[in-house]
Image (cartoon, rainbow, N blue to C red; front, side, top):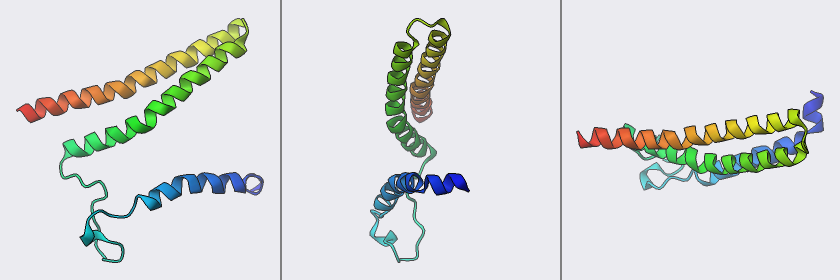
Length: 123
């Protein structure tokens, strides 16, 4: 409870940062799905699994690539802060390795999904 009392302003700011884009982008493009119409419409506006996976991975890439860039910058700060200390250098190397593995998984998922999609569509 003390945590909430101390950091309520940070929590409110963080919730607004995530809620405002959700609310502002929630307005439907389809006039039949306007607010107050009582209809539940598809927010992604895809009709096939292929389109859904492509839309999902595009969103993940748009969020993931800047996160990877920030993680690499953070790893650079870890290397500078190590100042020759072998234990801290080892931690910085591990952080960079895990960051690069995460970037490879992120980009590899897009490549594999594109490969599978093109293969299935060509059949």
